[in-house]
Length: 154
Image (cartoon, rainbow, N blue to C red; front, side, top):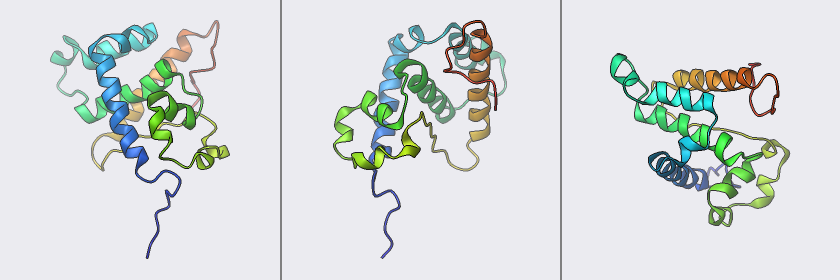
């Protein structure tokens, strides 16, 4: 019988994604999300997701793409997670009880890591392009006093 390669995480990443998306959407709706991001990120989110910009374009991000972008920005800018463990702990402490914590302490999880699970043909390239632009513009904006949180080297 085949065994799962995710013995340390099992189905927790799927539960985590659901909880994260709910948290992000609530923060978006009540304005907490927008208020806690950089001015550059605020401008990008207005352009990507708000009228009148969305009304004048023929092609916009669909809901799945929008969610992937918002989740990534939320983890990076609002939670300021430094590792995979921090990401899980920042969203829901209870979810950590379901995981093998020794597995999460492996070196490969000791840095920020973002993952979007999107089906073939759903626009992962558009999402990646948007996130590269977000990183680059934030890095350029803080050139005089770099925080090290954004990259312009890809």
